[in-house]
Amino acid sequence: MNDYSITILTFIAIQAIVACGLNVIVGYAGQISLGHAAFFGIGAYSSALLTTKAGLTFWAALPLVILITGSIGLVLGMPSLRLREDFLAVTTIGINFIVESVFLYVPFFGGALGLGGIPSITFLGTRLRGPNFLYLCLVLLGLVLLISRRFTKSWAGLACFALREEETAASSMGVSPIRFKLLAFVLGTAMAGMGGALYAHLMRFISATDFGFPLSITLMSMVVLGGIGTLWGPVLGALILGVLPEVFRPLIDYRMLLNAAILLLMIRFQPAGLLGEGSFLRGLFQRKGGTSNG
Amino acid sequence: MLLEVSDLKVCYGDIHAVEGVSLSIGEGELISVIGANGAGKSSLLNCVMGIVPSRGGKVIFCGRDITSLPVHERAREGIRIVPERARVFPRLTVYENLLAGCFGMKDKISFPEKLSWIYGLFPVLEERKSQLGSTLSGGEQQMLAISRALISDPKLLLVDEVSMGLMPVLVDKVFEVMEMLNREHGLTILLVEQNALASLGISSRSYVLETGKIVLEGASGDLLKDPKVQEAYLGL
Image 1 (tube, helix red, strand yellow):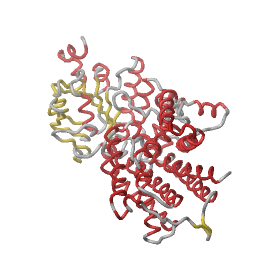
Image 2 (image 1 turned 120 degrees about the vertical axis):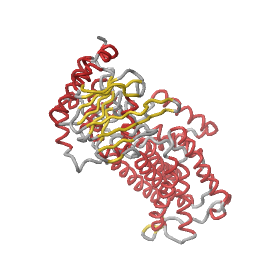
Image 3 (image 1 turned 90 degrees about the vertical axis):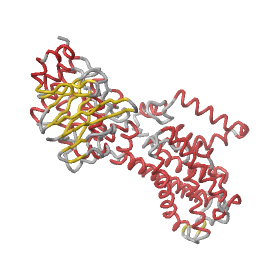
Image 4 (image 1 turned 90 degrees about the horizontal axis):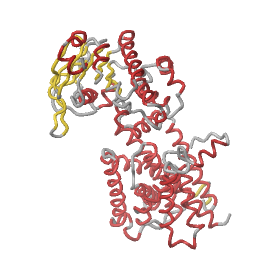
């Protein structure tokens, strides 16, 4: 594999991590979020600042980054998650724009110039680049998938599913709506933070526009395309939406048009996503006798 | 008294659904509230559960004022509701629906034991245990909703219009189960029904609700003989 494909795959792995986080919020807990890129950005900026200004290594910064992003998720989620559906969607869009503006206009965050000079990641004394960086991303993606799977099998996961399906019925069984929506939100934003840290150290230069609203939409598209609420859906979605622009490079000007067409076709013919309940691919797996938990 | 409701009021904007209702239920009783469509029966029940807020009055459960407790905390106190039109979790399996029913109770009850008891009560649920809630028929969904509430071993079961939309043979079955739960397991049940004949038949006492107010109360046997009740609710 050449350097170019490795870079593309690394981006896809990072976006898959972030999309998995969004899937916890939207797919498992049923809370719409159209501002997920904000938390990806918070993760990237936290890691960049901790490694440049505070002089920490990537490994020392990573747990802090996850903690910071999750905490900000908690604070922003507390008022937002009391809202329902369309109001929540608008609020999360607002969060995205506010966070982007803070990065853009507050000098501490580098302003319009962004943050540069982010150190690369070293592991056992060697700099991680190319395939090795990709392996790190894949390991962390595996971790995120493992946590997602554990979550769906836990009581907290069941509580989130119940809230997603019928909030009133769930709460009249003793499930606290705000508590479990917040739990999913914090878990999802922490995953986004982890992805952000990887992104910062891959690019080594970040600026506010990297984390704008269009990215939130792309992340949501990945989740919807792959199969909302399924384990592997966000990964498949990230892969398809990451590879397509490369395959159709001659059509690069029509990229957004192509994405829109894909989404519309999905919603029309496979509303649960490629790996969702009753989808074509799932049927194929099940007919072969493989057990697909999605 | 297990549950004491005094002067309870429920409003939706300017519309008064429940206007100062008082009722009480002792432990082990099966009480029914009958009334026509729009009399405020469901509002009353939802307010006791905490799903709709009260605009006045008090709800005392086990001697504790729960008027200001949110729904999920009332549930933890041991109140469960079988909601109107079942409201099962459509994309969860029957088993998962039942598991969700005893959320936060895993130390207090033995789930496998309760599960086999439920499967004994409604064998069709065992046959369908790995099917999604949405694939069940209306009657099966209603059975699942009842089971989901029962599995937590509640102190008080609120039942909202369980007969609605069910075929008559199932209505009989569901009412039989209610009666059995009350007689044999001492379960306290507050039944809200349009089907006056059936609910008067299994309850010991009843309240008649009209446009948000209680107009009549007494032993169900006496109400069955009351000419006004016969004319208005029994079609005799």
